[in-house]
Amino acid sequence: MMKLILEKCIACKLCEKACLFGGIRIENKIPILTDLCTNCGACIDVCKVGAIESAGTKKGPVHNIELYKDVFVIAEQHEGVLQPVTLELLGKARELANIRGAAVSAILIGDDVRNLSDRLIQHGADRVFVAEAKFLNYYRTLPYERIISGIIEEHKPEVVLVGATTFGRDLAPRIANRFRTGLTADCTGLEISDDGLLLQTRPAFGGNIMATITTPSHRPQMSTVRPGVMASNSFSKRKGEIVNISAVEADGDGLVEILSRVKKEKKGVLLEKAEVIVSGGRGTGDPKNFKMLEDLASLFSGQVGASRAVVDLGWIGHDHQVGQTGKTVKPRIYFACGISGAVQHLAGMQSSDIVIAINKDPQAPIFQMAHFCLIGDMHKIVPELISQFQKNS
Ligand SMILES: Cc1cc2nc3c(=O)[nH]c(=O)nc-3n(C[C@H](O)[C@H](O)[C@H](O)COP(=O)(O)OP(=O)(O)OC[C@H]3O[C@@H](n4cnc5c(N)ncnc54)[C@H](O)[C@@H]3O)c2cc1C
Image 1 (cartoon, rainbow, N blue to C red):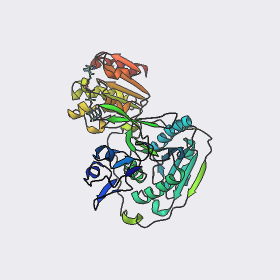
Image 2 (image 1 turned 90 degrees about the vertical axis):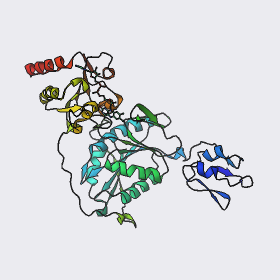
Image 3 (image 1 turned 30 degrees about the vertical axis):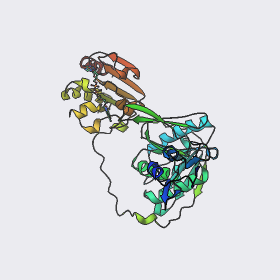
Image 4 (image 1 turned 135 degrees about the vertical axis):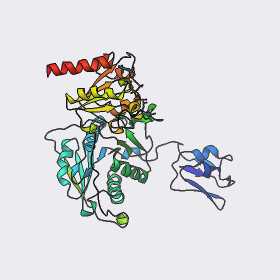
């Protein structure tokens, strides 16, 4: 904690300006620490008269880390349908919890959703907290955040995982803010150290580097993960505990009222569900050459994907784009044809089961992660593949 030495303070307000959190204020020429102080020490660094000292370690843990254990997943369901990202998060949560010798819990909220608990348990949860009520039938930020935060407050998980969906992107920052903890959005990789530090990897600086972010002093450690990045696991005959959470409407829950719901029609390319994707990059050479990629994809009832370079060139629609600013896919087979393998492209397809890369440059980065590397001109290789697959089908 910070210690103020009032007799030294000259009320210059440098500390107030240096504090990013509103943790210190000068009122009537007297410095006051507020609840928002994070103990970061920025005010000590700028104070020229030594009026602020750290009463403890300058950058010690802010929360009592020892109290926090287990991995929690916030389940996402809409109208009683569990979203696949929840099962993927449970797969990763199980892996992290096993390393920590901890348990996995899922938080499930809605109206008449208890029947989904078994599926959560089957996919890795040891315990499911279920809050059911009519007023929770559709997601609304305030009541969902209030109820979930109550469960987190009581059970103190070490890690909380949420899908990087519209639901998770709205909910997770609210919860993180409530606990004054960190949140790493859109993670593509999660690992945990033996002492419980979550290593959260995500593209940073416009996607030019992969950064690993940690939350050393605050708990819980919170991450959102895009759908399709982690693998789900189903364990047959698992048993788990179901914990009922009483859900009562509170003042303020009704600040946002849902008047009507309009379902967006799902049109176009369903890359996320495709088992085989044949993607083309700048090496495709011309928009008309995407026809051969369609022909290859159609042999497997697959879909055509693309790099951003060709989308930007207008050769194919954005619906087809795979990558950081496109779709995240996880097919059984991903063909990368004339694609160099930029980190932003890999961010969207690196979880594919098998990657077959076709590139005329043997040094192309895509070859570093591909399972099968076909070095040569795609305009010769792709037609040859089509003819061989047709012969053997
Ligand atoms: C913030 C940000 C977000 C981004 N988001 C995405 C994203 O979501 N998805 C994405 O894809 N990119 C994204 N990018 C762009 C990314 O950095 C690359 O520029 C892009 O992926 C390159 O596309 P490409 O591989 O098709 O083209 P290039 O990098 O130009 O590679 C073309 C490849 O084709 C090969 N080639 C050429 N001719 C042939 C041939 N006849 N036969 C075989 N191989 C051939 C070449 O050897 C080369 O390796 C993003 C960039 C930024 C900064």
